[in-house]
Image (cartoon, rainbow, N blue to C red; front, side, top):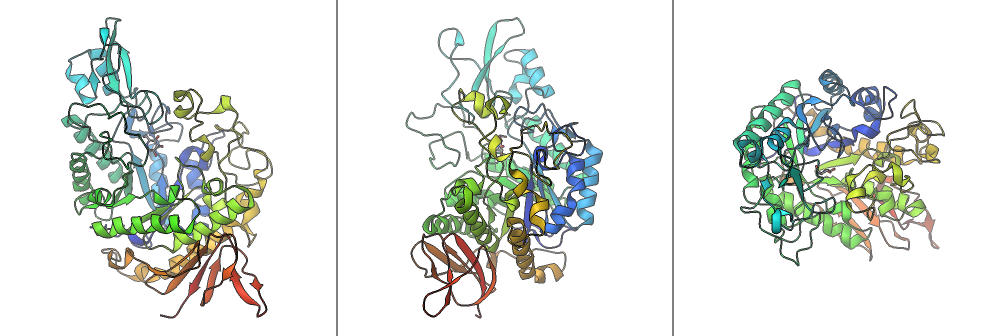
Length: 551
Ligand code: NOJ
């Protein structure tokens, strides 16, 4: 069942365009080189200009920052790096004033090693009740010197770390599917769920409109923590059902519990990070008493090929349809290579990212825009190695750089680092030379810029859902017409689909121009030249177009 419309929003959840703010990298108000909540407040004008309906704010809870906020030491406080609870309250008020919503990131799978529960567990020793909130186990092999099972950590290396017991001897091991600083919680322990409920109510009482739930498919672990079969290839998008670490049946009870709390706050919604490939298993998370929405990641990994893009779209639509929910769409986030770079960097990469922005924003359902995508930012692989911060870099013995490349601070104005992001050039990740051409300032008045394209696209898209805006503040637009598009026949390596309201989106992912489909052009991601003896308009390679067609 989809969610009711939030009281402060312009339109129902099902039609929203939401903007993902990576808090460290959006805007720095106090000159320490790291973005903060006041920085977001100061730049709400940018969000209004873009025309989005709200913000998904990456984690800002108290955290030592081993995984930049995804290692939480106090889930009911704001980290001083970002401000304080009052600053968050002000941000919520300002966003609501601008008729935008705020989604907070929630991290229920693990805590920080600096969480008081974990410190107490280490101090209390083996067999203590304090250890039961986590997965402490004896090691295997002589003296217990081998990890309890063969699970790898997502960031490289084993998913287990050995502690030194209070008596000074090497002792038990604890499970961490991510970094060693992120011990996994045991959701069978009653304290874990009770504490999450307190956390949910704390932020809901403060006025937030919903949550993005981290690792929503990983919260339940299999009984006995069995080894993975040798031939299971652990992957981020879970395609192998034998990877027993994820998508356990018990996880759904956690989501029902979260849902019961949200149901006490009409208009709020939960979005899950669900890296599950199978359509039926994915849609199980969207049952009427579980998550309202889930991130489907197919488009973040699909290559720029019409067949692959269409397949990614169809699988998302199918999953939402099976669940009676609506799909969510994202080309990128803080964990993946930015789309400009994925699609080839330089001129073609940027053109393809622009084209895919039009494809994404034409699809029915909820669209997410990762901060910087609207500026056409590439991933930055020029960060000096000694400045890398993602745990992946060290955990893989420097074999994998990790995700810093897509988290470089946003350039706002000027020609030199820090491009208005901060008052210091010593930003938490260095900003490269040459980003003057990506600044908001340089793109704002340029009708050909990526920022102008995003603004125009969102404005047009929002006009399609204007009916929903005018409606009452009750239930959303309904899922029925939100889970399908009509596919048109298209030349090879092209695609075209029609929305229920008659708008057609056509994409040319091939390397030659094709005839422009009939209809009134609403927007194109690049120039639409004419060609041939009759001077007919064509759709060039790496370009998408929106057309209004009479139905
Ligand atoms: C998914 C988040 O998006 C990612 O950034 C984080 O490292 C892991 N979950 C662990 O919390």
